[in-house]
Amino acid sequence: MKAKLIILASFFALCSLTPVWAAKGPNAPVISDAITLDDENSIIQMREEEKLARDVYITLYNFWHEPIFLNISESEQRHMDAMKRLITKYNILDPVVSDEVGAFSDSFLGFYNSLVEEGMGSLEAAFGVGVQIEEMDIADIEEILNSTNNASLTRVLSNLLEGSLNHLNAFNSHPDSN
Image 1 (cartoon, one colour):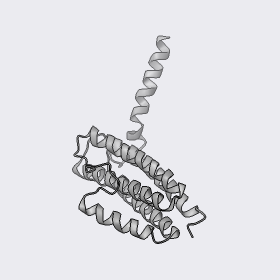
Image 2 (cartoon, rainbow, N blue to C red):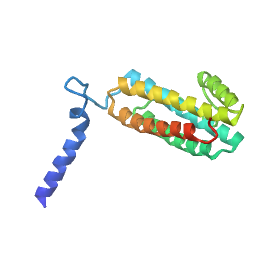
Image 3 (cartoon, rainbow, N blue to C red):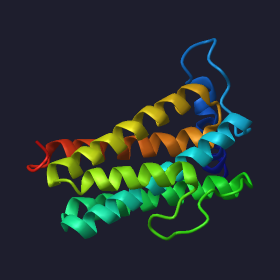
C-alpha cells in the first residue's frame, strides 16, 4: 500500500511539472505563476471584454428573443467569473464596478452602445455583432497567450478561447446569420 502511495505521489508531482518540460522546445520560457504588469492589464482587459459580451448578448436577447443570445450570455458570465477569480487571486482592482447590464467605464460604454445599436438594426446585424465580439475576444486572447508565461492566466484564457471559438461557430452557423 505504501509503495502505491509513493508511486501516486510521484506521478502527481511529475504531472504538476508538465507545463515546464512540455513547453515548445528547449528555448521555451518557463511557465510560472508569477504575474507581470502586462498580465495584470490583460486580466483587467479580458474581465471588461467578457462583461461587454455578456451585456450586449443580454440586451440583444431582450430585443430579439433569440435563445442563442441568452445561452451565450450565460457562458460569458462564466467567463467573467473566471477572470474575477484571477482578479481575486492576484489582488487586482476589479474594473467591473457594477454587475448592471450596460454599466461600463467610459472606454467600454461607447463600444457597448454602438454594438447594441448595430445589433438592433436587424437580426442578421445582431448575429454580425456576435461575430465581431467573438473575433475580437479570440484575437485578444491569442495575443495574450503568446505573450504571457503565467500558468493560471494561460489555463483560464485557453478555456475562454475554446468557448469563444464555439460561440463564433454558433453565430456563423445560425440559420438567420447570413
